Amino acid sequence: MPAADPRHPQLSPEQLAEVRRLQSLYPDKRGALLPVLQLAQGTFGYISLEVEEYVAKLFDLTPAHVHEVVTFYTLFFQEPKGRHVIAVCHNLSCHLMGAKTIIDHLKQRLGVEPGETTADGRVTLLSVECLCACELAPMMQVDDGYEGVLTPEKVDRILAGLG
Amino acid sequence: MAERIFTRTFHLPGSHTLRVYRETGGYTAIAKALRMEPAAITEEVKKSNLRGLGGAGFPTGTKWSFIPKGSTAPKYLVVNADEGEPGTFKDRYLLERDPHAVIEGMLIAARAIDSRQGFVYIRGEYVQPWRIFSGAVREAYGAGLLGKNIQGSGSDFDIIIHRGAGAYICGEETGLISSLEGKKGWPKVKPPFPAIKGAFGQPTIVNNVETLAAVPHIINRGGEWFAGLGSKTQGGTRLYSVSGHVVTPGVVEASVSITLRSLIYDECGGISNGRRLKAVVPGGASAAILTADEIDVTMDVDGLKNAGTMAGSAGVIVMDDTVSIPEALMVVARFYAHESCGQCTPCRESTGWIYKIACRIVEGKGRKEDLDTILDVAKRGAGTTICAFYDGAVGPYISYVEKFRDEFEALIRSGGGA
Image 1 (spheres, rainbow over the protein chains, first blue to last red):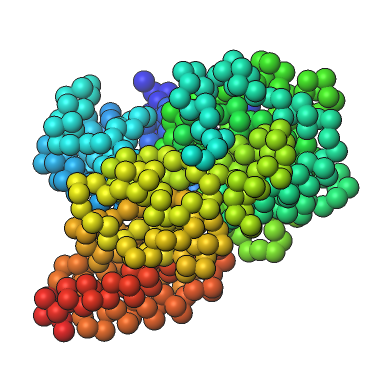
Image 2: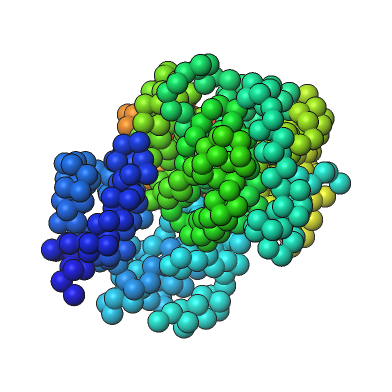
């Protein structure tokens, strides 16, 4: 679908109306930059350089400003990500409770290193800083949700349930 | 057992809904506050000795009083829901289980500082908390508790929910403001403080989720009552996030003056698997570590400060006697190296180099001068940066090495680096 092509980005009229609504919420429309980038990533899959330029125009900002913002935050992807993103916490509480075992297990099962996506485009594996669910350590984020008190067996069940 | 304020409805099904919140006394404090003079609200909060529960521990009423009097400029109330301090998860519970307490706290704070516009900055990874909180805001609008002419009072207040995009530094209040303005989350030089010149250049108060959730109770039951629950210089109970090697990790509500020993052994069942305690981080990763024989301290801001560490966000990370402290240092050093925003040279450079040194020590390639190098680099950088991030990193760097120096030295010797 051309409309969702990150190389030739174009938001729909409804989405552009949403951009204007978001911009109107803030005393300075630039306040809506993060929400609009989130909308753009949801539409195009990731934030390509072309998406950065497209969004910059919507805000009368330079592409450099948008690039600086995109590269600052971990939740903006600059290349295509898998259909699912698994982000395993490796910070202190999860480290104490066995995060390394979980990350090693996922590396072995998926055949990728953290930061990589499986060849079939199914899963992007990440190793991340504290997700603030330390009572569930070791834990990980799978797309929108948190999964905790992980064991290799539980990880296998979660992987089997992913589309 | 301590009084339950923040967690009083956590066990109830639908505790996040307007119906349950109202059935348990919700939105009576704003009705009372709407009949109070704004200055009287701030005075009551001052009397309560409520101190910011996000990490810095600054007196909340005093913070509110910094908003210029009589200013006609728009004033913004910003809620810091960018929970990110390693070992902390209590704001997630409040957003999911008692979102209306946060909204009511915002309404009261807004009246105190004459704000008509609130922003709630929720970390991007918190998808479920964001959904639940957004639902609560919609319900509050539907009931006329937000928007124009709230409850016929003539006051307006709107809430905009702003999702973060993954950056620990945006939990620092001026970094958060930069992010809210559509920039990378670089902290700003203070002064001017946000109360004078904050979000979008206007007077702004940034308060933590839990801090605001305390406010309705203070208005309903009085500042003196809240003050009486805590220590001489800090009122209330607070939420402790306890994780690591305890029998029952989780959120615990207790007085700010509970001892660390009681929190671990009475509230969380002691050390798991019958092991012995080795060390505890009492206030999130950025707090200096305490050894097993340093836990007879009270958890209030001043109690932990006197013990050479800090209450911070009350994230308590418990380590048993199997834990390698050099490995723990490597893990926290990786965090600071990754999350340094890169603005100030001492922080950007030191966090990276200390992580590299910690890695080589753990790999058995440590050099005998490494420990003094870590201490030297850490101490030189302290206090030289725009925000408190690097000072937060220095706490663990120095305390891990100084308190467990023998363990580090043994590891370096075993690798041939003696």
